[in-house]
Amino acid sequence: MTTTIEDNALHTELQELYLITKQWSADLKFISDETDILKKLTHQPLEPEIKEKHAVLFNTLEQQHSKLKLQVVHLLKKLAPLTYEPIKEIKLSLIEEHQLLKREMEEIMLAFHATKNKLLTHIPGK
Image 1: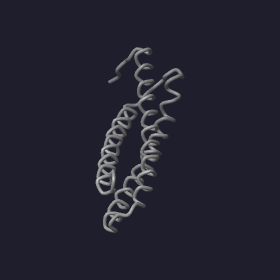
Image 2: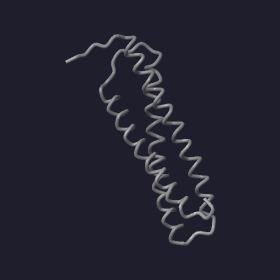
Image 3: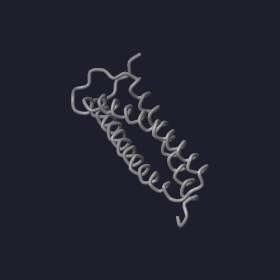
């Protein structure tokens, strides 16, 4: 079964997917920058078990971050040509990949904010 979508509507949707994915790239940069700042805050006098707990949380976030960054770059490379070249064929897997990445981005943002908030409760004067 083939569904036909008008070229203008399809181009608009693809541009929107591209812009959303570009925003994710900026979000990942923000997480990276904020994580660096938060790591510096852990140099404050904290109990060793709290430092260790947050080191583990940040390590997990960094692993997720690295994986997502590669996935976002990969998706951007797929989407970029579709926003300006004539479209011959688009597979449904592109939309599925975008949706999966959207879910993962939401999860990392939630995990980052939860980790940040936990850490800030242990830092004196914050």
